Amino acid sequence: MKKLIYILILTSFGANAQSISNQVISSYGLSASNGTAQIDVTIGEPIVTTVSDANNTLTQGFHQTNLIITTVTENETVNDYQFYPNPVADQLNFLYSNPNQEVVDLQLFDVSGKLLWSKQNITDNQQIDFNGKPKGTYFIKLTTEKKEEIKTVKIIKK
Image (tube, rainbow, N blue to C red; front, top):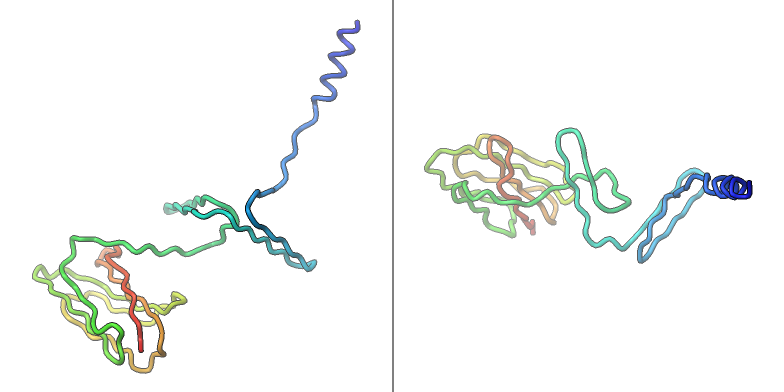
């Protein structure tokens, strides 16, 4: 009879479910709230990775927001190309030696990622007009006609 009482006592104490709250252990953190909004900041994860397919996005780390990530990659199968002069004052030249008549697309972005100019189906040399654009940093994205990224080039407007 004593064994049955001990078993009932032990099982009644062990029947509690575990509760896990949202917690992060990091080297620094801060949380602030004003009653209508809350912001949480953590520092301490030096490397994060985002992997996605057509339907899903998986991120490693914490406090990931909806980020647009642009990678800078090279595709060595494309013919020679060159952007000059860099830094540019008025006109940027795109020199494209293309004996196979491969088609590429160009897109010009400002530092915030805003698309400023684009041209498709390029098979020869081009000039990109920088007149009227403010001094600063710009990016030109070179892609194939299948929208595969070849290279992203940093351009300085003086």
